[in-house]
Image (cartoon, rainbow, N blue to C red):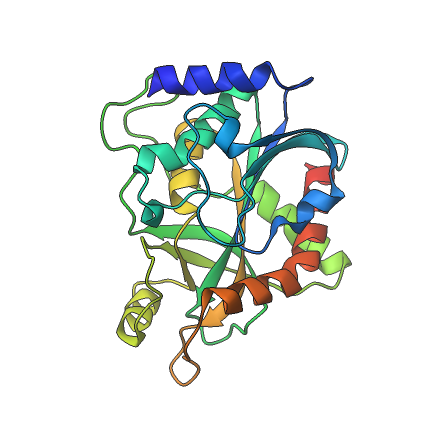
Length: 269
C-alpha cells in the first residue's frame, strides 16, 4: 500500500503547479462548491494510478486543484464507498495521498439520514463525533511512515474549526445542528428498527461514508471538519420510502448554504 500511495502522489505532483493546503471531499449532490474555485488543474479519477472510480450517481469523479478563500485546495468531486466493492484501504487511499501532497486540514461533506427528532429534511449538521460501524481502515499492517499503530481518537473533529463555523453560521443566519454521525456500510437504506437502534446508541444522523476518511486523516494527524446535509428522516412517524434521487435533490437544494459555510471556513482557517 505504501508503494501505491507514493506512486499516486508522484503522478499527481507531476500534473500540478503548486501543492495544496487544504483537502476537501464532496458528497452526494454537493459538487457545486467546485464552481467557487479558481481551478488550475482537473484530473479524472480514471486517469490516476491506483485510484478507484466513482460508481455512484451524483459523484463526478474528478480531482480538482485550485484556489478558494485565498487557500490552495485539492477537492475530491465525488468519493468512494465501501459498498461499491472496494477494499477499505482503497477508498481511503486518496486521503493518504492528500497528506503526502501537503494538506494541513481536511474538510468533508456528506448526505445523511436524520435520526434526531429535532432535525428536518434540508437541515445541516456539523459532526462533533462519530460511531464507526464500517470496517476500520487501519486494520492490517500499520504504515509507520504515516502514523502510530494505535492512533488517539479523543478529538476526531477539530474543535477550532467547529467554533469558527459557529461564528460563520451566526453571521450568515444559517441554522446548524451539532451531533453524532453513525457510519454504516450500506448500500441498503435503513429499516425502522435500525434507525431506532442508531438513535439509541447515541446517533443523530446515519450515513455510508466519511468515518473511514476521518479515521485515516486522524491517523496522520490531520485536523478534520465534517458536515452533513439531512436528506431524509429515520424518526418514528416521519419514515417514508426514499430513493437515491430524493437524496440528491435535497442535497442540491441545501448546497448553496453549505458552500457558503465551507468557503468562509477556508478563508478563516
